[in-house]
Image 1 (spheres, rainbow, N blue to C red):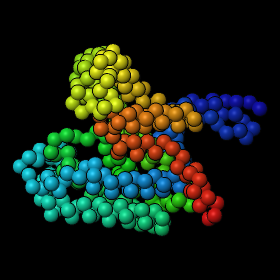
Image 2: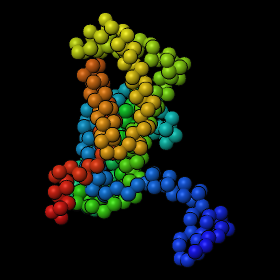
Image 3: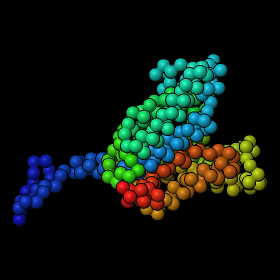
Image 4: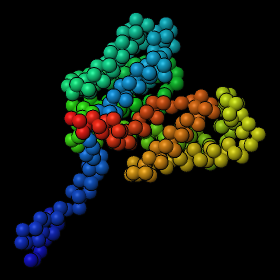
Length: 307
């Protein structure tokens, strides 16, 4: 058997063997495979139900300010994106109608996931309504960066199409949607670390500051007020947080137990901040589920075996 060089730079072997693809194509294929891995459709179906169920909680508790905003339209200062789409302030009646569109859309989204049809239609309705809801909400002051991954999730889930809890087939569309959510989760932490650095001038400038002291004095619970007597401990905590945020992209390449450990660390961190200063970050915490093999949950596995 002999080999010769093909015109594109790869090596082709005679005798029936397949020619090796040029390295740019191999690299592009590897990137595409990473961005859109094949994952079970049941995983994205379970994630879809989780997201739509959480949206109900989000619009009725976490970001429930849209309807009250209708009484003070003069305070509306739209974000760049809201200005780009010419989104005006709206009154409480419109806010109430929008709330019901989201609630009914989420219920329909869960139902269609269980049914196996109309998932794109209900998904796009929920995505559009929730984007309008959030753009209005963010026009009255604080921009919720903890919603980044959630906004990505509601946008990409309709692109997957039909997926049920019983569906064991693998899909690149499902993998791409979940990867987008994963990137949104990681971007939340990296963006936070970068913003801290920009505001303080250097990473050390923020990590050695009194941010934790200020936060605990302002809204700290009895569980952490004792740490004010040990400022060095709070400095260590700030360094740990900054390092954790900068290193968060590593989770995109972890697998198995190491991935589960990383997810547990981040979720535990948010549980600690909620217990310490009342900040929960639930929208991001929910989206960590995009890293997990939800289809392996015992009741879902039994459901597929029974199908």
